[in-house]
Image 1 (cartoon, rainbow, N blue to C red):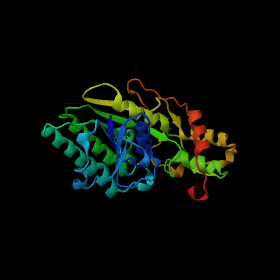
Image 2: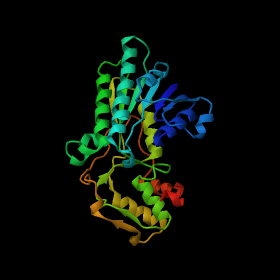
Image 3: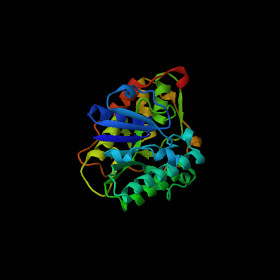
Image 4: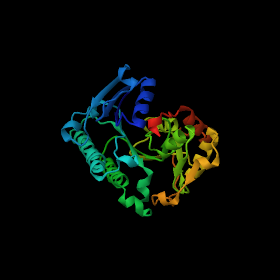
Length: 302
């Protein structure tokens, strides 16, 4: 099979490309950022530098020549990049231009790919979590999901929406909370958080990539919606306490400051509907141990 992945330079995109290559498939990786990954030199991989916010650039994507299109590209996933202009351009306009390209193929009677689109679980809570209404990532991802759902109404191939919960693992953005905790505590320093009482469904990166693979390959027609999470919830306080124990740190290494809360501590959500034939294989304790083992602790990263 031939797979196209937008956002291939990202935390998940790079790993998903590697997984499909390992399975013997061909991969076209699309991103605005140039890649430095070793997969650039692997047989079966083609990299395309493209700007999804430019209709002319999007029009050059070989979407009619692939079997599955994974639309993973997104702006504002991490708090450091949550600015309205870039989130609107990438998440809304980028998705709009891509769906317009696909709709054009449908109208022309051309071959179209199966689609897998990654949705943030935060989107389901815009009404009950006021803080999310001022979050450019959540608001623009909600709009992008609407565009995908609109395309599905007249799309002849299956479209799969994968609702993504809290993904973590080594090589994630240094600002991600569990990466920050592991780096800081492993270096023997004090780590500071908000009250950390909010409950989240956490999923290790290897399980997430396996779930994305199943979303694309499982049987089914029409618009299918899956949850990529563990079906269990833990508070951040529980997890960083476990990380501190793994690192051999005293209780004093953890500081919880409620003044740093972001207004979403009441959120309590978990996965319900997994893709057929898939379930997570990494228990949370094992995943946290692997995170600590693999995480880098260079001085400039903490």
